[in-house]
Image (cartoon, rainbow, N blue to C red):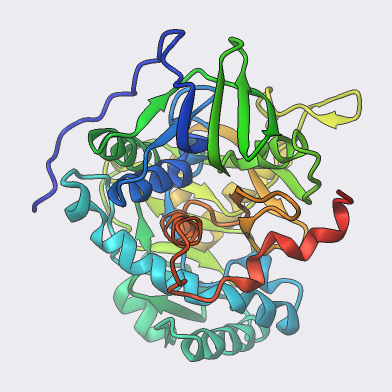
Length: 409
């Protein structure tokens, strides 16, 4: 089936009374991961209800730049080789996600902006080149196809790169997708299969009632289910706390920047092995600059206020733009059109949480780093676990049970 070039509008907020009193599986969170899980469960014929406190895909799933980074990121490398080897445990998930993103548009029958034309990780010093070689060797051993290119080969592929760039690791499977369209398309496909999607529906309580889980939302309505999947991004840890569970999920505030439009010249996605950088050009001509530059969370009574957008950090803005221009000098002539902030979630050990919450039968969670790039894979693996099916990949390293000691009962 060929993808249809149609536009996708947000699903309207549901009126009071549309939350069912009962469902088999309740999904909390309407980002890419939650919508994908709803779709996979619906494909399996499972009655599922997804609830989202705002509108679908408007939190982290729309605030990120839609990068499909499958090579290890800078944050996974900067702590050294041993830390990189630990992060490499997740590489089978990356390889699985490549195939799922490639198949998604044909599967859904709509375009969601998936473009996998390849991506580079760059090195500008001899020491960085050595790290790049080590990283690429480990990735190839783990099943990710990465090719090292010297300065001459880089120039042939990307002549706009600075003369300071000495080496690049090229992964032909990297690229980008439209985060909002992907989330909405998955939700629409799930709804067509019978899933109930309820937006503007904030969970205020989640508890065990007999053999069921009971969620109460802000309107006072309640919904019971045999299973619950928490896929609420930065809110995931707090929703788990409603059940008495403690999981080390932390909010991380980040900055993104977009330039004015210019003629297409950059086909590839770029990262840097020794500096914070994520760089790509959209189909409209805008260049998006990111890479993990921090913004500032607001706090209320010493607790991160997730309801407020983080404040822009001017130092991050300046340094991110400077980094991008030093790698691609012609960006210096483009004005910055806008910058924005968003929040993502990280687990204390930088591995995802994927599985049943300790001491809480029937309660599952999926959150952690790279939840957009790996969201389809997270959802597929977790749905298989919820259905009692054998896993296609070993996800024991991401089992929330590794934090069992944080919850006493």
